[in-house]
Image (tube, rainbow, N blue to C red; front, side):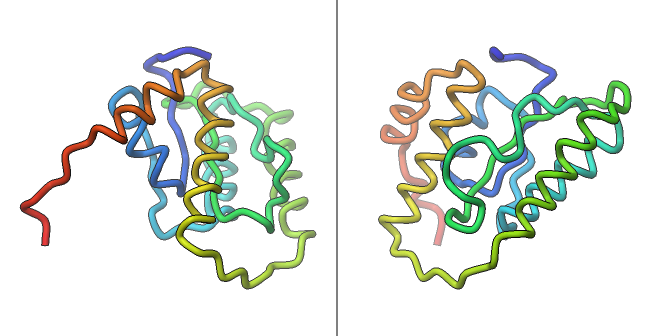
Length: 145
C-alpha cells in the first residue's frame, strides 16, 4: 500500500493524526475507544468500503491497548461479504476479551500510540521515521490557550 487518494484511516490514535494527516484522509475518533474504531470500520465495510488492513493486526490483545488504526477505501466500491465477515468476526473477538480498567501513565500511552502507528505505517509502506521527524519538528501553536 502506498500513498494514494483512495485510502482513509480510521483511528483513535493522536500520533497517527499528527504524523500522517498531511498525506492521508483520516477519520479521527478523538474520544473513541478501540471498539469504536472497529464499529466504524464495520459500518463502512457494510456500506461498500474496501478493507485494506486487518482490524486486529498486531500481537497486542485488544483489551491491552487503547489504540487502533484501520485503513479502508476513501469511497465505497462494492459490498464484500468476505470483508464484512472479517470485520464482524473482529468485533466478536474483541468482545470476547474482558474489559479491563487500566490506568496507564502518559509514557505507556505514548508507547501504545507508537506501536499502533508503526504497525499502520508498515502496512501502508509509509516512512514512519519521516512522520515521527515531522512530529518532533512541529512548532507548537502559541496562540492556543
